[in-house]
Length: 171
Image (cartoon, rainbow, N blue to C red):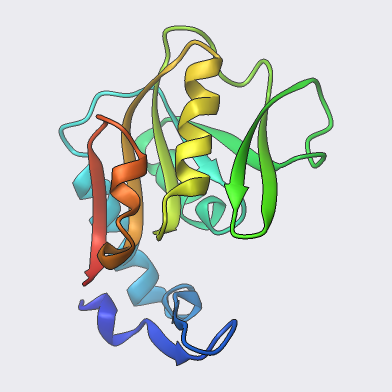
């Protein structure tokens, strides 16, 4: 299935001049959702890893079923203040200000091999922060995985040496 035929382009959202790639129709279509999960699973077929670190919130929608299918743990990478147990966090720059992502301190252990997953790679700031967070916990980022990559925004350049896998790419 060609997921580009399911993803909807929304011009001028969230502000004029931005072309938003809306992936929600993929989740609303069982065949497209299954194709996306299958494609992501295939991208990891030769990868050895222990856990998926899924970035809030749409990374959860992909990471949960994928982790279950692969028999792997899923680590929740959440916005600051959303996790109830002791956490470790990592800040990153936004266009106007900063944000922070966190994981439970006991969710990632030294020596683990982690794949960071999110729905979309744009500028790479959030994914890069998640990768730093994983490394701060003593684990290794063995790959980054995305359903969609906006290549023109060069987010890959923020992610270091780990392989970056994307199912759908837009120039």
